[in-house]
Image (cartoon, rainbow over all chains, first blue to last red; front, side):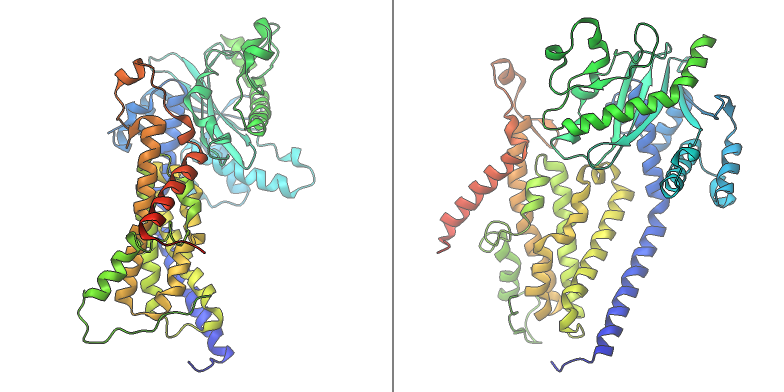
Length: 276
Length: 220
């Protein structure tokens, strides 16, 4: 083979890059809707599992049936900074202020809007010198009311584990103190170690634990290093769960973001507890 | 880098003659990419604790190797040799990203289970190895066969490892209970180590041992 000129090399590289990017951009555009629907379905399934639905219940069901099930049993409520019920359109306005296009947002549900909002606000907070000023203030609560009265309040939980952000849902009984269930659905923890937060034995430990102490102050729930029974005495054990061996840092991350997430919802929970 | 074999195939050669058969079947056992060339170990260890994700991974890898082999082989005479590795990587990563996107759209749960390992097919040495060693010097048709052969060779080992690990480690296969309940009542306990990474090391080691014994290929 004769030695190619460097101009030929550049042209070839350019063509390859162009072809590859056109193919990828095309695929991504074509598949985006489906992927989005899958993500939404996954979220909905997780919210339902956090209140005690079993994964087996979704087997053989079409996505539409699962969405219908969710719509029937759950109500998504958006609350603003002052813990008042906020309108979805209000959030769209806020997003438009942040530079989003209105027509892109109008078909989105509250879960997607909240996601968009959170990620944008986080980005802004990261770039600014005063991260606190970008506190989103909005809170999303999924109320489980299979028979008309609220039987659980589900809140999104999110924060850093060891490697990356862990996302999940926590369901609280109507007393807003007892945990009804927890799920983790998105994480990048080490397979076999931190990734075991997804396993049933770990998640089921949270059921029945309390987030408030006797005086009604928020204590959150802590993943201990090792076994609770060996470390925590008496009644206190109600705020602790067993850790995963080899995944101490994942546990620490979970502790921190549970505390932060619950703390940000606490003022709102207080008003709800007063009402009932 | 290995220099490629010569393009020996003639125009009039049969579409699926002896040579083609050898190209396809050799990597199954006699020249297996995992056990003999010890390539692609990372994913062989990582996603073989259950059979179902393993099968998806095998299909994904076979598609990518076959696809990249064909594409590279078609443009092999135009690729400037100075940037050939980069070109190969561009082709491979495009294919892998495509597979990843398709999985996300059509088999979301599976793509969650395989997580980063689909993306890591890009760095799977089998793919780049076959592109460099075979596709750069052969026509598209034998390259396709070579890709499929190597993909299947990889799959055979992975399926073997995954089957052993799932049965021993969880008592199940493809999610169905294999070891009867009565065994558990009689005191049988699942071998938890098999689910963990050491389980894969042990089985892979055993398979490589059997393989080398049977083919009498020893490293000196």
